[in-house]
Length: 381
Image 1: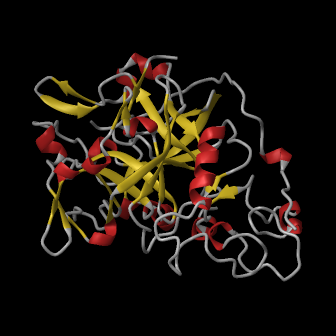
Image 2: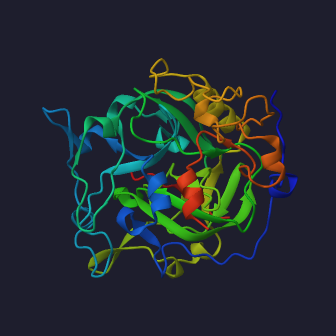
């Protein structure tokens, strides 16, 4: 028998909010960090975050591998001003997506829909490990099991100038060697909550932006003061206390992310632009009802690889009625009552269970290691 216990104190209803806004986006200190420079907990989540890369940016090799064929940041914006970061890194990505099921990713709607015109899925790849994992060593070649196609858009909404901007996508096969990232499934994030953005700003290899907080709760989502740039669109917004995805990045300031400053180009530093005093990064909440339903339906519906022994969603090893792909407590004693996450009800009432529910698999490593102006969609197109 399964019941759901709601922790009221941890789950406030979605509402409008006004706050004393003190912005902090692409400004000193620039908090963007490469894969090798972030924590093992964030690296574990980043391993399941994919770059959306156009087929014109990847060259297929005879052995089944792929090679990046993109300009560096310094080549794309020449000359780059002295002191600008990441100039020697490639700029291949246009958007960001997160693995939440064996063959399911979530992203921003505008990454696959430009003013009502759908992106041809045959023109893009979803690429894992587009990351600088060793200082000074750029990602150049990818194996076949790091590169995937999209076969179906299972749900998509893209309403301009709002946070109602999300998509759920099925890949061409189950992703191997990676753990789907957990997604909040009950309640909403609180104003003031610390959050981390993960994505491929400026098309660069994966960057992690922390030192940010939720500044306001708005219709369909929330706002936060991230260091992000075009290309982060669709990237996961992670709660560092739970390791769960709270939303996906929708849009940033209506200003150029990289601009010409005299004879050279540099990234916009927010205090130089008055818009930064009135606007923050807009995030689409995974608790938008249609978004939540689309995720649930996609994960519960099997899909590519669903008949494989290792596919998520097939097995229920402890026999508690909750499939292993969403069973947070995978060794429940026989006969005990569990909630929708497969945990004993007593665990939730004592605070040992997950906060406000999840969809997908919680990265337990993370839990152990971690103590208005006009908007512009921020895909790097």
